[in-house]
Image (cartoon, rainbow, N blue to C red; front, side):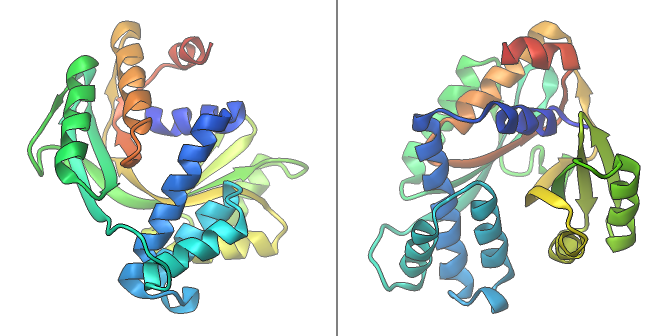
Length: 249
């Protein structure tokens, strides 16, 4: 499994401080706004909006913020127009990075992202340079509470999951992108505790890194995610568990 998955798990365990929480809420609201603008404000007929709202609720975005973001997307409330774009680059050790952004100023965003790459041992690449190393998938994280992980894994497979990985008391359930919602819904009917569900760009292969380069890659990931215009970052580094623990500390 790529370091991104482990990194996301650490962030859920540690939580975020007030500044990062406010930034996260802003990013969640932006995604909802763009989804509503592209497909309308009716969640029943807009899969992307349903997914964005569900992810926002998983991460405790208040309902009034969700409703306000939908209204901005449908034009009922004002707000700057946001462009959706993806940047690609190379990180330490030849790792590949995909950076998804929503911005009202592309020149500002690309300058900030290029600066982060250059300051942390990487470089911004051309469109298409690393995208082929990733594929879209659905990812559901399940908290293994009273039920045995093996039982939960079997339930996920029967619901249509493509793969299940057990990690430190939780399950990572991989699905085809269009099966994500149905698999989640089926698991919820069995009283499974869903931590999160989202569409991700999963690396087809990973690049193993030593401690020095792994720490550099994690710092680059953290700094990219701290940018206001950046929604999410995916990379194909294989980070050793002991390095993740050291970075967390």
